Length: 364
Image (tube, rainbow, N blue to C red; front, side, top):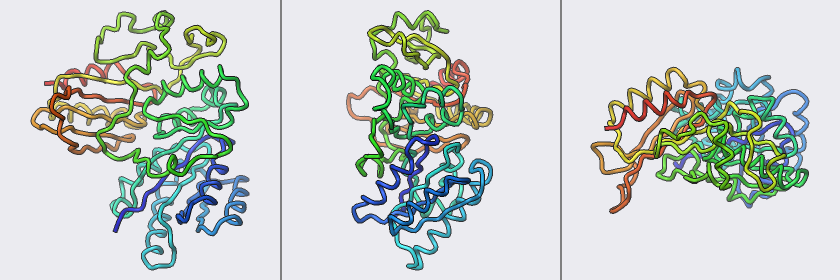
């Protein structure tokens, strides 16, 4: 039987998750969707709205904080849903898990990989993060949970953009892109998102696509303003890592009209990219990544790579969430294609120098 796709919907309080969810449920075009809500406290009011407007089966879990206990609860809930579906008591084609505004989506995502029974029934499709343009700057400054949600995202939806100036929106999009270059961003109004932009995004598939715009760090063409704060003014990593903006992803708005973005404060969730045309030594790389994940796993939100490995003519695709890492053989390198390894790491205060040096030393 085909696996049931699962989508994790996350975002800070007031970012419009319920609005988006209601829209998806009421316009599901014949798709039957099971919704698991991990809300608690007063927000359960949303549940009444959802139940009254749709015929979906909604399981409400009032288990307090999602971060501490969710893994067991979510497993039990997913197993129950799967069992009822097998017996013909419930009918649904996919599930959406809406997390509370303070949640870390990491443990939720890990549930789909750690439990064999879950992994044999469900397929994690993607993590969607809603960002409220009006309050994002404050939330990202003040709350690590908000920054983590951005780091985990496969797709970012920005709501309430009509309430901010074009300059503020531009600054926010820059900032989000530095935290997470993997996730496409889309500005949405009142949860009006086409289903094809919500479901079957295959954000968690081990595929050979690594969507990072290689020049995203110099896209505004004003590199000269960025070197003042840089830790690496001479870019001594030459072509391996392109971090023209260095480690200050956050931009304030005053300088954004027509000038380069000056850096205002420093986010702890950052991304960086490693590239090399030399092949990796499989044993060395495995040892190094194993050690890194052991030490820094809790701070590693998402990481993904398409690698050129010695000993195979095929691309090796790997990705991970926290301490969980998986790899797969991908397609053959095309004739004439440059065999370049590309990796992106998104995490909280990861030691970039240690990682880059270790990866460099894992090359053949």
